[in-house]
Length: 172
Image 1 (spheres, rainbow, N blue to C red):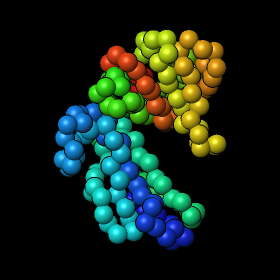
Image 2 (image 1 turned 135 degrees about the vertical axis):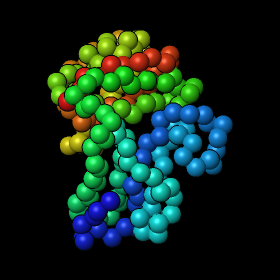
Image 3 (image 1 turned 45 degrees about the vertical axis):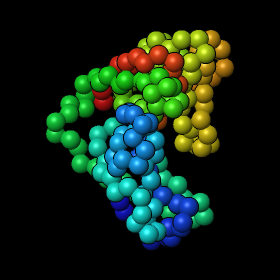
Image 4 (image 1 turned 30 degrees about the horizontal axis):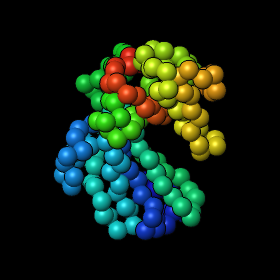
């Protein structure tokens, strides 16, 4: 991780990686992959010292400063990025409510199309992280609100499902 010289990391600021699967019965287990954010606090080096792997979702929280954060990752030679992939969307019981997914298809779509492809049922929901407003634009199946929110390559999607299912995402 490289940061610009203008950022002074504070106690409530961190970089985190989403760990989407596993069991909630493993509290405190390092890298248990238990459906939560693993935080690394740059100001004092505390938290989880994780490595970025292909398709990980990264969150950076800076509360009182501005600057550039550059996160670099070398391409994984074992993955064909142009191929489609299957993403497992776990139910709310398994992951305490939701799934974060990096949208890797180079063809734009919208939230309602993704909900259809992933076979979401009425009242299940999908959101897009809006990089301009810094809020989630959500679509709940069965309601017309936000159905046409456009999703682009490398956008972050959050979904909440009752039944575990698989979502096929096209490649780059």
